[in-house]
Image 1 (cartoon, rainbow, N blue to C red):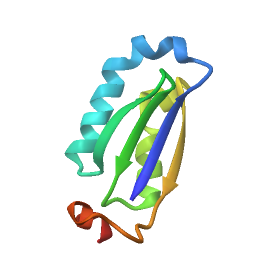
Image 2: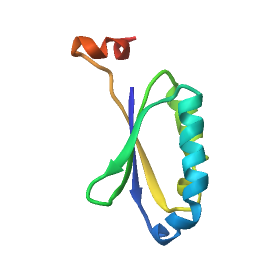
Image 3: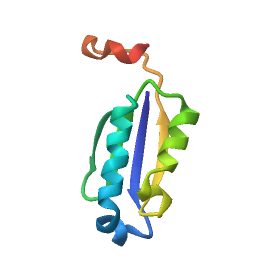
Image 4: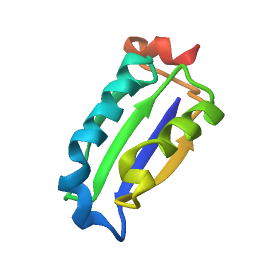
Length: 95
């Protein structure tokens, strides 16, 4: 499982201009089965993603195609988590 943070960077002012492309990229992440959840980092720091069922290499490649990342609207950080204990509702993450 991965946590991806997308923190605003030097070209933050271009976010509105690139938002439609960024949202299309998010949809592709869901369509490919990579993303479990996306949301905003508060207060107004950028975004966060939970990803699963994807290799780190494939996720890194996919994240690099985000228009926000490519145009330095955000900087991406990928954290890999190996679950050691889960609530039973999240057992699917153990695979």
